[in-house]
Image: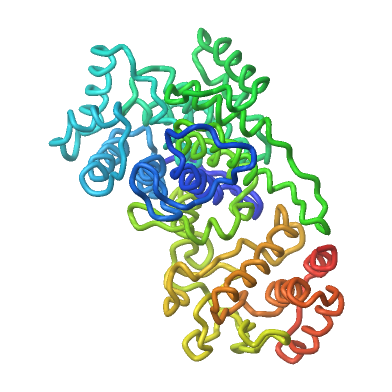
Length: 493
């Protein structure tokens, strides 16, 4: 079992963003796979189609294969062990039989060669098939192992050397060429450092984890990506070109200024860099999935636009909450945290009375808490501002249950302004769809009125201070504990 590192709230948000960011990049790139570069004026959308064809928001083989790894890493297994590698290999084969919507040519050949293998020895057989393919063709450095490598990083946040060993071992199941393993090591090192420190420096730090004879070559390839625009790295089926395209998109996208009044937030770098990755063209879903894993690690799940989180999904019946759960369990060595989250059926309820009040300017927005009875409220959509269980609010369609990462403690959120604004704008969108929306947090006393006040300002133009004062009058008898940072955030928006 890999050693775990205690994570604070912001680091946990970043860990939660890794698989979510990869899946959203994948789904964003799906419609444009193997197409020409997008024009600067064309805004990529999760509209589906592509090679599948895929539904809007559905991710492809990139994330599907990452799920095969994440199901094992989330158990706390040491991914270097023969048992864990056998389980991953078995998951790849199950995916090949049951859920593969698209498979890269190299991966297909390897999996087909061992399609009848089961149980112990599956990993060894798969490695042998990959090595044989390499001997016969001399070419096995495709991007198919890099695209799925993100879960490995989360399993070894405290062990960079073990991370490198595991990244290479999982890569070699299907990709024998050392360059593919090198790319996985570099990218996992980047994800690790981004989760822990909130920087992109880890990709270059990863050079020290490579064999000495290849470090200078990789340093040059990284420098080339840092100096040239993303569109220079096409075609990008070769693992080096795919990594360069993703790294270039990240490095050549400016980080926005922090100017809440102008709806400018640094974490929007995630969305803009993923857009740049898709615009490169060619293997768009893979390049964007690779970039998305590192961007999610740097900026967190809270930086992933809520409209994307709402629709992203794919094999095996995973949605945003599942991706976050698998990521956090992996980072926590397979152990759930307080109250069994993530993965609990129901989140622990606070010792407060049920709350159900209509928003003062919109009776179609209901203000509540974890005790609110959705059926009694008549809500058809839910925006949750706190941790919820897998079965909480299951009277509502899963696509209409939106979870927002917002911790009710000053200093515990990486970009509180963006999160509060996103949550309020999601309310606007759901109301346009004619939903009756339950807006809630755990107790309904702090996060709920903060987002409700922002919604007031967006929809009526009433100044934030007046909106907060109005909500305080409404909620005072039900408890009012708005933390000072949230008050400041709403006023600055």
